[in-house]
Length: 109
Image (cartoon, rainbow, N blue to C red; front, side, top):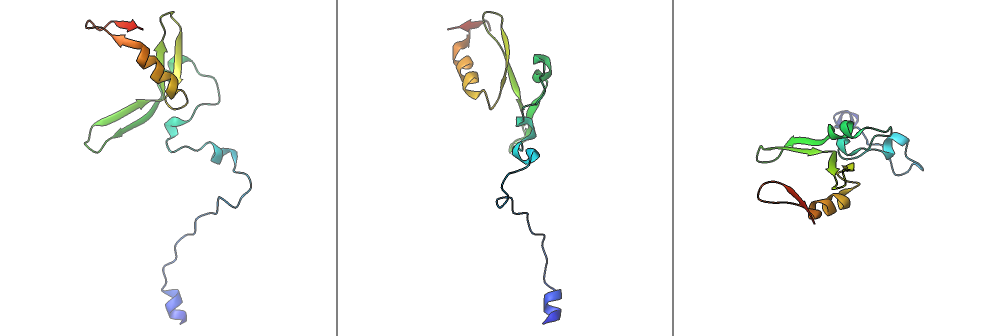
């Protein structure tokens, strides 16, 4: 019997995250994708424009790149960095408002 127990495969047991009362700060800010995180310290639009949320090949082998922030320039000249998750609704609104004519010029509705 003892020999049989010694030959058993022993796998590591995962931590029980649900029995704890409060997750740590680090655990609260985890996302499925590190590029989805929003920085705690303020960043310039230029810094935000360089961040990439996803840069991986898809099933066909094409490289998929998604920026963390979409930089939008409104007709009044205002520039805004919209986070691809947090500001998704506003990004959709901007896309619906901005159209391109046959010359590639942006037309705002």
